[in-house]
Amino acid sequence: MKLKTAILMFLLNTTSVFAQIDFNLCMKIDSLAAEDQKWRVLNRQVDNHEIDTISKEQVWRMVNKTDSINFLIINKLFYEFGFPGYDKVGEISSRNFWLLVQHADKYPLFQDSVLIKMKLEVEKNNASQLDYAYLVDRVKLNTNHKQIYGTQMQLNSKGTSYEPRPVVKPKKLNDRRKSVGLSTIEEYINEINSQYHGTLK
Image 1 (spheres, rainbow, N blue to C red):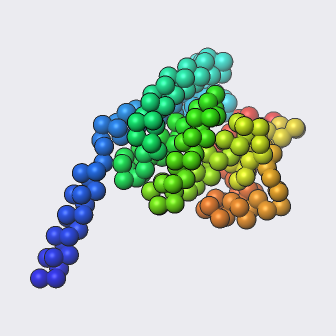
Image 2: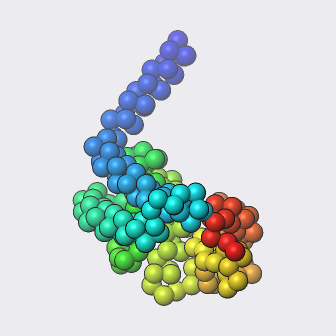
Image 3: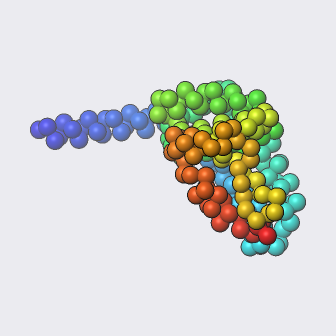
């Protein structure tokens, strides 16, 4: 009898969770993210000399065009729904929304507004703390401040490795990264170097 009750409660809770998910909103967000990633993946392939049928300039024109179109839509969605957490759109679509905001670099005030709302959801375990850290750094750099977690990278002066763009208190960087679930900066640099090996001399 206890087992049947437990199963019934599980099914009721699962149904309740799915009933709260806005699937139309999920589809809107996910389709925007798919277009975003299509051009950025192509850009990485060009950087890594995996394809030569399109130039980097052509790809970046499409990246910029896509970002501009996507911003108009996510801006409207944000002011209608706030930051869509797991309870609203599920984990995948919530992270896709964050991704789109992350790429709205021309609109740092918008990014900062999202950051404020996202923090509230992170505190309720309703959004990704790790993604929040990435957006913190993005907003810091886009408003002419040093980043906190070292997530945003640049090539070093010799072009032989990626390195973090300017960070506050570099000696404490790995402690801050660990606090939000990020790998060490050394591991992160190795990961970025392996992904973008074509850009290294």
